[in-house]
Length: 401
Image 1 (tube, rainbow, N blue to C red):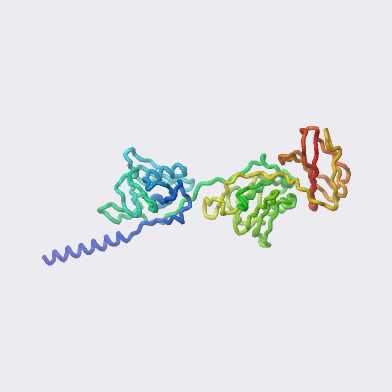
Image 2: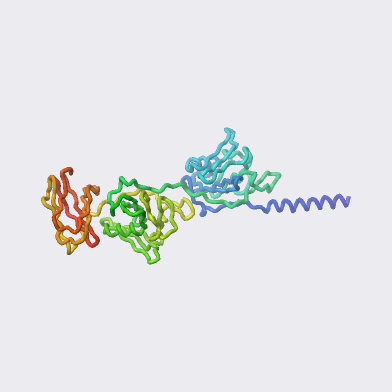
């Protein structure tokens, strides 16, 4: 008997150590402040985690609601509706058949049908997922048992130790078609678009068009030329190529993008090069933005969804002591003559309507003779004729009858 009792005690001790080690395994979770993608609305919050086995992956979303509690199915339905990457299949009886996530890189499904369990705050639930409820502050995890650890064989409790990763939200970079651009700077057969998404004093995005004849240009080249052509736009940068500030003065409003909040994307993807090194080719789209109003779609990759507005041509008159500008006849019918007195440098002449659309643009090369502008095809109304070069910019109003 003593031997038997000793054997029993020994076996119980071994089983106790074994179960203690099992229960030492802790379910990996995540805190609300780490969640990046919140779905739903309300003052209550819960976290949904899914764990797949091949490869071992744990992803998390946040869910907000106003009710006292929600079912696990309601959370999953909300996530599936908001995030096309996530989907699931279930029977009418409330048994989960499969769960999927596909973002183009990861393509996840359960290893085998019905091999799934779920926890609420680390405790196994015996309800079906359309019945089990989640209260504010709780987290629910559905996991493939192939990659879980069975910590309680009696109650069939699994935990999943894989580090939980917060899912990034979905967002699309707001773009603009070249045909919508109103203000083109530079000359050449190649075109690129330059945009800035400001946060102060409000969320707004403005865009310019840029033309060039070389194979590529740096972003700083674009910004230098835009600043030279448009007195409303300016920027400041360090010698090392780090941006300090971008500003845009639009009438009585003054927009600012501070360098320490600024990032830029090239065709929707972040570049790690300084803007005096990063080159742009024909068809490219460059956007600066304040990361605080952007959406982080990957680590250190932000996009801005604010609709892009084309900047109208600047009709502000910049005084010049060297050049005087006049038109005659004005009002005009079929033509007008542009007189440039004292112009010694090449200049770009643009005719713009009241909506800011550029109707005509050409270069005048150090000519003091009057330049003929055809107006026969213009509708009756008010237009602006702008002459700009490296040192001055002047605008005069033109009336067409």
